[in-house]
Image (cartoon, rainbow, N blue to C red):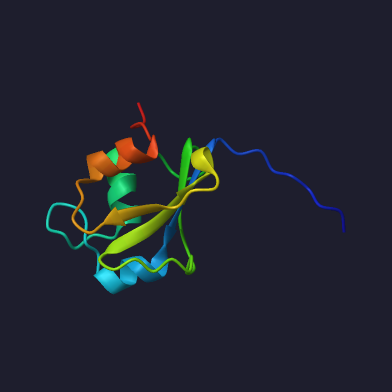
Length: 103
């Protein structure tokens, strides 16, 4: 079976370590209990994933394991992993990752 491609609207991929987020028990959002992926999606007001310009996914362990922080990688800056401390304002995270709100 040949490899095929499927066109998508996404131009940026953000991979967030699920294991780091689980250790923090959330750590982001208004009350500090929301996982980073969910908080970013809400802050950026992204449409459904099929039409979203930014695809945010939670991945397996990135083998960085920072204390009190979450490891994040983006397709916009290949070769670097961001370490986002717990409690960082989501707007600052989006700006630091180079992400803009939809619409």
